[in-house]
Length: 155
Image (tube, rainbow, N blue to C red):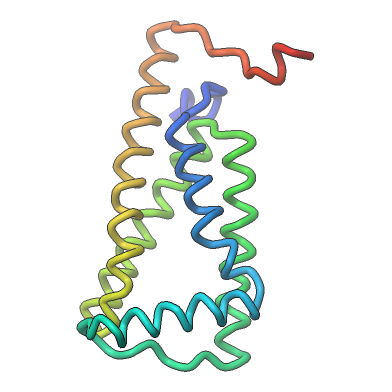
């Protein structure tokens, strides 16, 4: 645990996961773009005849919480892009486990199968990041030098 707390070794796959999260969730950060994305998801559900309940119409109260999620995940993504250290990537991996569990719960309770489009990448990033953290901590234990960031080397 101490090595997880102290390691400054970048987890490259963690940065990639953060970029994916930024691209996927930034549109949820405003009520206007969130409404657009949720409408697209509803159209996908309807046009493909997916299993589960159709996407509901989101009112102001719903959009408030959707956009709060969008803002927080967008900010968290930027932090991990800038500083993809094992501690932050491990925390994000735990968050991915929670998100995946909630996606599965929603599917088991009749939510639109459109959620599967979020569940599959979430589980994939969970596994990739967990392996990336493990690899970084192993390199620390073996004494492999921590790479110097390109920007720091140029300064």
